[in-house]
Length: 279
Image 1 (tube, rainbow, N blue to C red):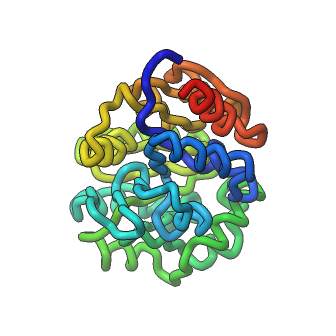
Image 2: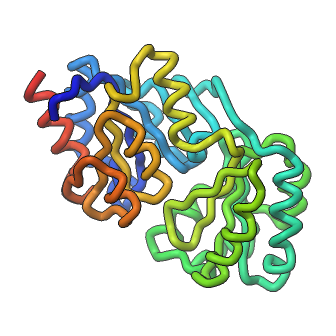
């Protein structure tokens, strides 16, 4: 790794965080060491701000957090930039998928000003929509329940960071994505096979990270980025060094310059330790 690294961009779930949404002590020490070596640590996550674990939000070494796949940027907890969905896009997504929601074949997660919301019956039994056990626990503990998620989305349609479609059926997921991709005003990505993440076309992890790098005066080629999902692939390809986790998706690994060990084996920490050892 010959390039000078001035920034480390970190995805959270499946990358920095363990399955229990905690960060290991080894990773914590590696981030501290990186910061001491003047490497800016930037979180770039698909999570909304309120669902970022407190240990991450309050970590001294982290100044910037990019959330909702680049739709919003925070500096020390203060929202400094966003790309909210256009109200016509919100209406279109709900109109095209509403009949499936009424049939119980899909449901929605709605993100407003950094908070996450879901239909009450979905939060009571997320496994019905294809979520694995650890994701069910996460969803139940990070979403605010509402009796009418569609009405809630329409009420807040001018201020949505993003909409997630939760789709258990892989074939239906594929058809919905193909249908919605015709709308050039939305950006579609995914970190899990059952969750389609929709935000403003100008968002995306590259946009959010790019905004931060410009503020810092750091070039993409001076940045190392870590990720495990399809929603990380473009970012890994864009930066100077893209690192995929061994537990990552095929798309993510193909976009990366190198693959490290899994998140459960502290893959991020191992790479940062190597970089700091050369400083």
